[in-house]
Length: 402
Image (tube, rainbow, N blue to C red; front, side, top):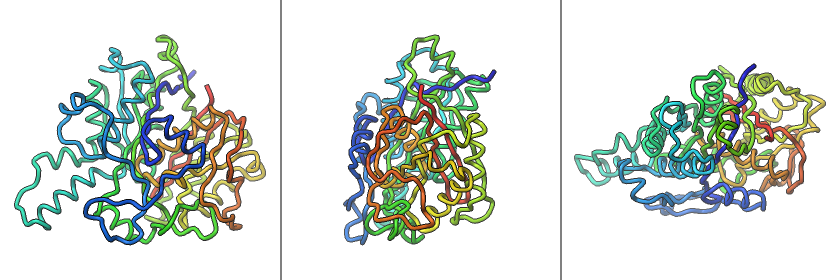
């Protein structure tokens, strides 16, 4: 009999706030974080809207100083990890030394650090950059710095699969615990993509909305970037029980697939395969009512493809489910998106409240789904959380109430 994997700690920072409680309260109450923002070097750029999380940290300088130069990417990750581990009760616990893994998902590295280096080289004509530019900007930095902060000596690495990165990290961490390789995993994702270079590249792709993120809506014009992090502490059920830990929820299933079709256009068949695989892994019937946290980017291509995949998988059982799309509130957090959305979905499940999809102006026929457009009380036992990335890299997580 395989081990159940449970969640004993959660941490989150996003444009909605710092800490799980601040994020959940804002989401539940229909507060959005997307707004015009101003950052140094970005003045005068049209349509500069995003869900901005301040890079300032609640961690003390004593905690941070030994970790070296920190990009906002790592600050977000450390903040979320600190909260999650504190809630789990594992702070300072001996198990963190060798029987714990750290898996972080990031879509890109330290964009702010890279921008600063390029500005020095090409804007100011300097011949050198900060000597810590490479370690601060590398995509592995958040995982490494969490390990340093917590003194974890177990397997530690970063997964990068664009917008599915942190969902893959959580799923693979679950498998490591099930297999007995580790007892505990600190897993999630972080992203800090609101820099001039990163934002300009996204704008050039033609997928950014000028006003708002409107998942599954008429008049949707694209995605809106956000940044932050989410980290969860996962444990085998036996390990959590042995130390008397409070179980928040179960991570019950994980499915992954590749479209193998196109770098930016989603494929219905590949998406549906990941959803089915997650249900099979969780031993969950398709017709069991679930709260579905949609990938829901608000782009012209993603939303109808995701809706079509859900209709293909759930068929006549679709109306038993309820669909939320939290990017409408916190923006698209790229590598962190899967973990943030799974975490907020778990909180929705446990609280029995489905938060509203914001900015919705009406549902077109190709996006017809049982959407939650105003806050609803729910009694679902199961969460399905979708993450579908550029390159056709798909991951779906399934959570259960404890």
